[in-house]
Amino acid sequence: MSTNSRFAVAVHVMSLMAWSGEEPLKSEQVAESVNTNPVVIRRMLLDLAQAGLVVSQTGSLGGSRLATDPAKTTLLDIYQALECGGVFSLHRQPPSRDCPVGVNIETVLGDVLQEVDSAVEQVLKNITIDDVVQRLKPCGTLTNGKTSRVGKSNGKAAKVLRTA
Amino acid sequence: MSTNSRFAVAVHVMSLMAWSGEEPLKSEQVAESVNTNPVVIRRMLLDLAQAGLVVSQTGSLGGSRLATDPAKTTLLDIYQALECGGVFSLHRQPPSRDCPVGVNIETVLGDVLQEVDSAVEQVLKNITIDDVVQRLKPCGTLTNGKTSRVGKSNGKAAKVLRTA
DNA sequence: CGAAATTGTAACTATAATGGTTACAAAATT
DNA sequence: AATTTTGTAACCATTATAGTTACAATTTCG
Image 1 (cartoon, each protein chain N blue to C red):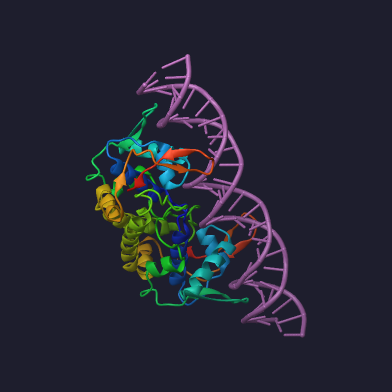
Image 2 (cartoon, rainbow over the protein chains, first blue to last red):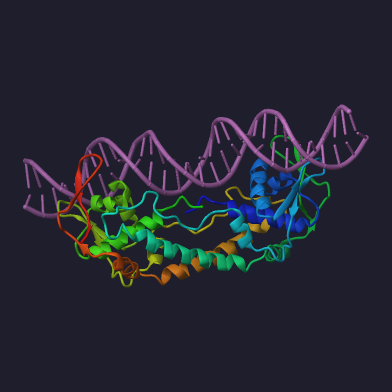
């Protein structure tokens, strides 16, 4: 259905910053891990910052870090920060007013979609960023700040989080 | 999020046929109610037919009708017929293998998305087409087969379901 | 102060899913 | 045989998202 990986990327980004702790991450480091362009990351960080989930700083020692306690921040907070507006959509064009089904289907479907959205939110509300990080941990430990460098296609390099 | 109204339209189409009963509906009649093009409807009917939810027939008395009992057909059946493949997606490009978060985030997220999908399916499983039609009914009754005609932008006209 | 680094942001292109349109062969009815 | 309708292909349009380049504003540090 959704060609929509925004939620997956946002959780990824928040997990990186939870793992990194107080140390601010640069958009290029994050982009390296996510395997995308730094500007895509910065755009997403704007959404997260607007929701009060991260704070960023310009300048040579700048970057972004979590603005909240990862143990109290849920996937629902992230989902809502993206302002997706629900899992399904109603009709693009309003149905016919001359048909007894068409004239009322949007109202009935609206109730159904509300029910679906509530179920989704209920699940997301009960998973914190910390939960996600805990589930990641069994698979490797982190050494942050080490100047390990990874080659890039354009010849540049960037600090990234490396497994020990 | 989803610019995706396919589910809404599919429920609309199935509701029309449940309301119409044994009488087959032509794609043009359905398109009139949904306010779209008949080919869009036929394409969707192919998905529904492949899932065994509707049957269609060519010819001058042709059209489509439900293949199952609307009291036993759920919105989950419709959802699955569309083969949407889940509410959210994972990353387009696989994340970095050199990062402890990147290397495992897809596995962890996969579990989360599975949980979300299950919650959605649980809701859809408990709503039948009949339920939807019942919720529509308080708003008007149907006279099917009357040759009421409604003008179209191209000057043509088509039989549609009309409120009494 | 001035140089270097990084975010914030605009402008543009690329990709993919969906919707809309036209056209026509195949099938069914009369 | 003529008419109607589905099945289906081949397009173009629209929308959301991703990706890219460029640059001003901000911050740190020599």
